[in-house]
Amino acid sequence: MIKDLAYMAFDVPDLDRSIEFAQSIMGLQVTEVQGATAYLSSNQRHHELVLTQTGERTSYAAIGLEVEHPSVLDSAPARLEAAGGRIELSTAPEEQFAERTLTVVGPGGHRFRLFCGMPERGDVKPSETGVPPSQLEHATVNVSNQPAFERFLRRGLGFRFSDRILPFASFWHCNHDHHGIACFWRPRTNGLNHFAWTITEEQLPQVAPLLAERGQELAWGPGHHPAGDNRFIYFFDGAGVLIEYNWGLGVMPPVGDYRPRTRVLGPRAMDYHGTFPPKHHRNANTPPSAHGSLADR
Image (cartoon, rainbow, N blue to C red; front, top):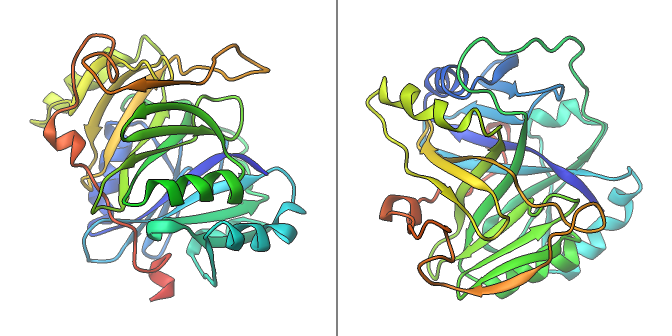
């Protein structure tokens, strides 16, 4: 049903600041600016990051999921609603760049925009700034009702189980990547914990010096996640959203040989090096937007 996680959309209070950070630290390229909305990408996609200025606090408007075929959108509403989703009429700005879209709000107010037909950029030149990733990789959300959200992922969106860390985390894949969506159980919180980009091993040490020039430190890492077998660093972006950079994410069968498993939370369940995420990482939460975009208000 779902081909991959394609983009993240955010409402931000200071568009210029968010763009500057994305360019100078992350090496993302602005593909287009229309009014209060900017589109950025690390590769041939028209956008992997959509930023809309609202003058309010930072919130995440939607997670963009590319479907395998347009026909998926014909049968999806009934399946999504049966799994606990609510179909929502939307006029989000990025919808103009898709052939078809369908917006669904899952348990906890997490909004997913299913689409097909995003245009590609023709001549993509290497970024001259920051540490540019190769692609958007995954999103990890905080959920107050983990069973309901997992049921929505599995039965509604068709994600498949990859890993679990008892009692609070689970990881789910829609293609061969170990996870496109992960969820952390937070009894009273719904929102985005972080979203992740793929980089190379050589790039991993390059981010901390750039952050230091701005008086900023890594939020966690470097480390090595057992769930997914990936190396990681975390940092906060210009809008206060937690970002993960990682390389070496596990590959699921039949393409790879990563086998799903369940771990119990302990000293090495989060990091093979034995470190545990600091409080500001554990408590990171960008709340869902009350509406899907500025245009909905």
